[in-house]
Length: 472
Image 1 (cartoon, rainbow, N blue to C red):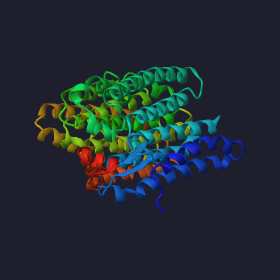
Image 2: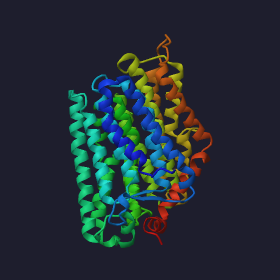
Image 3: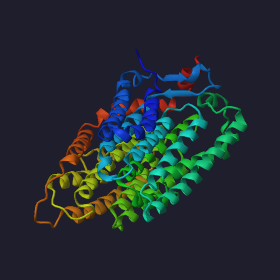
Image 4: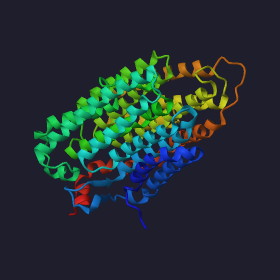
């Protein structure tokens, strides 16, 4: 029996509400339960890869209401790539939560799962209204996790996140409402047939601005370093590594529906500014969380630059999105291993952990033969082929700056301590697995591109998407 595509969404949602009940009497089972749920979600999406990557789009209509009246869920190649990424990162982080959350763990687990539900729903939904609803769920859960410790830094971060998230989702809701007023529908497949871009520039602009804010693209980036600095490490890792990637997916999906996936000079300018500003701001940061957040702003600039090139850059942008998430989560786990051992960031002599940090740093800077180089090279190649040599030169120069601030951070954390420190075995396994994956994707990028090319091609298949939902 083949389970419907909403199964992981339902399981995550039910688990989010069950976790506090389990935590009352079965505290030792709680972590196993949450990890098992994330494991189920991850392998469920993996199991659908042969079917979906072959070009089939899986559609499910809730309560069997025919579209566009009912709630439609749709899974294509692009959706599947992001779902594997989100569930994979959640799987890595969920067992480590107990190391950083010492009180009310059941509540944290519950909110963490609801945040994953929001991300999963954003990726699966087939209508603009539920895209807003799941975005709101992701933001509200993240806000609640931001103020979880109720200390000064957490409250400050939470208020900033609430204000910015509220601003972004308000724009998305207003744009969605205007779209419905223009077309009488919010179903994405139905909009493909009915939307007239010339009449929908205002709602499209509002929705795009909302998701650019969630992506932390300059000038909408100011919230991300402050929030990352003030929250717990598991939440900071999720915000910096995957929530912005999910926002980038939502942006792509909206552009797909409105038929605007082509050369975009505005996105290119915003992308270049984000690259440069994020890199220079990271260069002067002393707080590691802020550095990683600004680094993410810069790397999202690379991703947006690839998307601004149109179809020629989609596969490269998706590849860099995956690589950035992997490298960022690896760096956060390494930082977490130090904090877990000493209660704060300090210089250590952990040869294996330090070597993995160095490899991740080189990967983000785009040094061969690591995965960051493979995706950045594809972005450079796409830019040259599209005739944008100068922006590519800027991107290469930003990579040099990226290398400088990561090498400086490596020196600050892992050099100058003569006495060797024992590696934290709890963290060592995920660190080595993630490092090995980054090396593997760098040496054999075609392994990823075989998956990502169908995802990129799905972005030009508007007719196929429509036919999958309505039938042709």
